[in-house]
Structure formats: structure tokens, C-alpha cells
Image 1 (cartoon, one colour):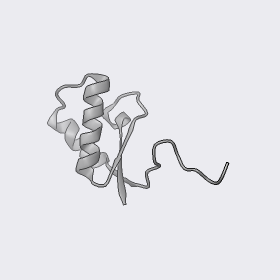
Image 2 (cartoon, one colour):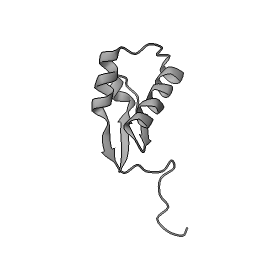
Image 3 (cartoon, helix red, strand yellow):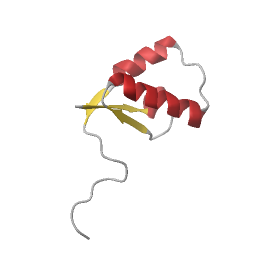
Image 4 (cartoon, helix red, strand yellow):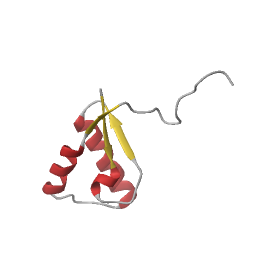
Length: 71
């Protein structure tokens, strides 16, 4: 099952969601996003622990959504 982590788990008002195959992968995707978009540089160990605990099992939707049939 895929893993999901939301940027809002960092305390931001952002709807970015990181999806991946492992908790480590989604954490790295989220941290790259937080650095690039929100300018976060150093994330305290306590916040990293919270993020690791916030990883959820999910079925991630491919970017752009699903095609339900011929159109």
C-alpha cells in the first residue's frame, strides 16, 4: 500500500500531498517541497518525529486524476 503525507501536517495552510511507496520516500518528497515552496531550512527533530508519525496508508491518485472512459 502506498504512503501519504500532507504539507498541512507541518502546520502550513497548503494542500500539497506527498505520495510514495515508503514512509522515507514521502517524508523526503514533503521536505523537498517545504524547502522549495515554503522556504523552510531547518526542521526540528521533534517536528520530524511528528511527520513520521503522521504518514498514512493510502491509495494515491495519479497526478491529473483517473480517466473513467472514452471521451
